[in-house]
Amino acid sequence: MRRTLLVLVALAAAGCAAPHYIYERRSSTPAQLDRDLEACKREGFRSSRFAVWPSNRYDWDIVNRCMERKGYRVRPPED
Image (cartoon, rainbow, N blue to C red; front, side):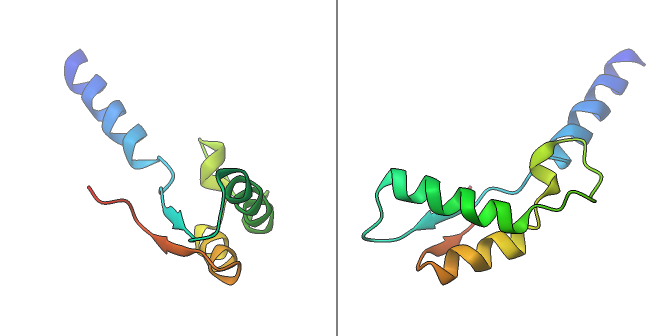
């Protein structure tokens, strides 16, 4: 019973994790990517959202569109 509960909690936590994306731009340095991503995350932050993890308070569609406007190619990671 205890093992089943642990597995369910682990699966639930994994399902709550924020999506990860890869942002690529030919002329971008890692520092520039960090600055651009932070600016876009500020734009996509939703303080009214309830979230267990802070990263789930972002509207990732808005963040990704912002990064695309800055010239990045946005794609999900290859599994």
